[in-house]
Length: 454
Image (cartoon, rainbow, N blue to C red; front, side):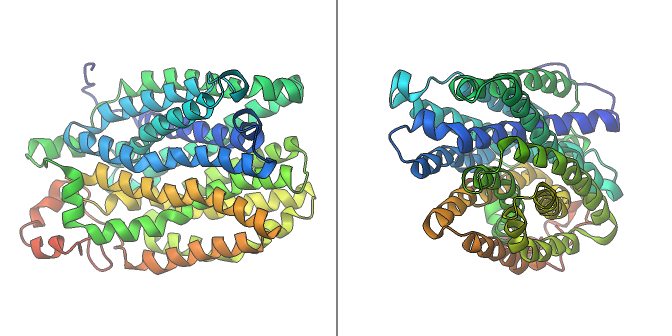
């Protein structure tokens, strides 16, 4: 593709290279979710009622999450066989170009049913690209990291959600201040999608100049490459895949319920001004970024598991106050609701970036981590906003939504304690030296559970 750099990149370059893709990822997903909540129902499903149109628009939002596991398998396969860098470049191009093209899709009034079909197809392609993005980004960061700082390094791509959230909201705020609502609905909503091309060019330039990770190069040199990584990870660590997937649903759910659903709920049901809500999210985003970095670094000292378990407990506690404060219509209290909610997100999302890949072996790590994140995203990001919208439409109350959040938090509390504490685990090919000794445990999928190292 290009010549590979020979010198190890600086920490700053690793941070930017790993962060830029997840920033684009969450920028893309956030602007889509915002557009789905605000205008897609009218533009692409005009024959539906207001609620049904929003549900249909959010369903196309969910398509991207459904495609993620497929992307995880595809990019994980080649990422574990050919390298992290190549797949990160391909995933960046696929998701970036799909996003730009979404901004070009004509409305239902122009081409009829082909409009929502095109929207869903591009969203599916975007989801495939995103399925390989997160796993590759955290591997790029952690496989370059010193052994005692993997949590901190893994937080570099984890601050992408905050950057994407701020960029998307700022663009929507600017457009809301310079154009009429009718102009925004007609064509203004397309601008954020087109603007992602700038991030795409920057991300491509940075990633093309990064060398392959030393951990993966060492694995290749040792001949540790499997024919089908997806089959290998299911054969050797199925229990880890299941428990990690169920345990990490909470992180994705928190982000999209708080940012996507709450925006729709506040503007559509509570009739809070859209500008107010966008500002609230912009204010909350730096707190989310700081908490993600801080709690990731904390997990290097106290462990991944206790920090993530604390996040599940706090999320359950905050499930009802989140909506109670929003229902006051007071901007300060709404801000508190958003800040604490995204603080809960940062509490689990920070350590997740290191913990998830640490649970898997080098030769199928890209596949394992990406698949866990992608499948967790189906429930957490794709289905949860739909569930919340449907509960609200059926009960005219947020009580059921709060119980839904509590249910997901309890699911995490059930699963996370059974996963191994990996803070001090060997992250290099030193793990492979134990393979023959631990073969029976590996075959049962026990390696990576509590009490064992990954």
